[in-house]
Amino acid sequence: GRKALALREDFCGTAAAACAWVRGGRARSAVAVDIDPEVLDWGRTHHAARLKAKARDRLALVQGDVRTADTRASLAGLDGANNPDGAADIAVAFNFSWWTFKTRAELVGYFRAVHAALAADGVFMLDIYGGSDAYVEQEEETEYSLFTYVWDQHSFDPLTARYRCYIHFRFPDDSELPQAFSYDWRLWTLPELQELLLEAGFERTVVYWQGADEEGEPSGEFAPVAEGENDPAWIAYVAALKPRAPRGG
Image (cartoon, rainbow, N blue to C red; front, side, top):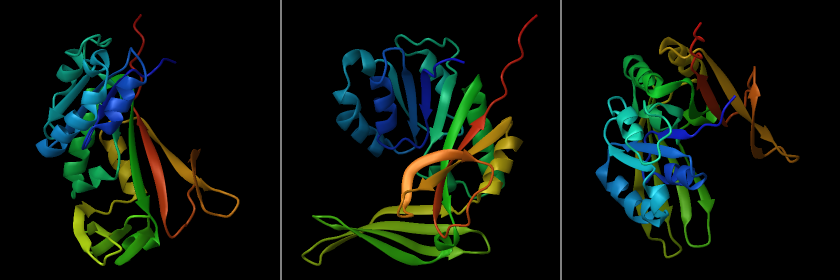
């Protein structure tokens, strides 16, 4: 019933999404949180610095733990902020970054922190992947003109669901940049994710499943579903909705 204006981007890395958000409208504001100062500095130099001054004044980059960062104070303090209490309309945790939390207690604690940072009708968006191929220890190569991108599902422990993955780059001269990116995750499932979001206080969840094109390949288009498909490899988005605040008398 209204436009979303305030964004919270968790595990933001270089804050590319938050920068794109404030660039998209004069009334928009964003706070981006990451624990790593190095990537935040890179984002300030290469993304935030390219914004117009007024857009840059509507963006806050916060170094901290997404479970404890006071994003309400950061949003409320921005120039032109339209939400004096600093509540975010939308929170996002993409690139499967929330998998860094390996226990139910850690994950539901994070979800509760997001719930508290959102407006009364706020929405929390996450992505997730799975399927039988996700559990296989394997390398997948994708050829580009200047390099080969290698996604390495290096190890999976069925006892703990601990999941270690890497990204390598290989070059035509047979040189290699190994483990350019490293991921130490837990491989969570869709039922677990939805149950913990409800436990954290969200009213309901909606799963958006990726469709297929005419050749049966992933189309890049996602739609709400009540049932998934047993694909060997799938990607989905999940929206967690807060209950709306009751109307006053």
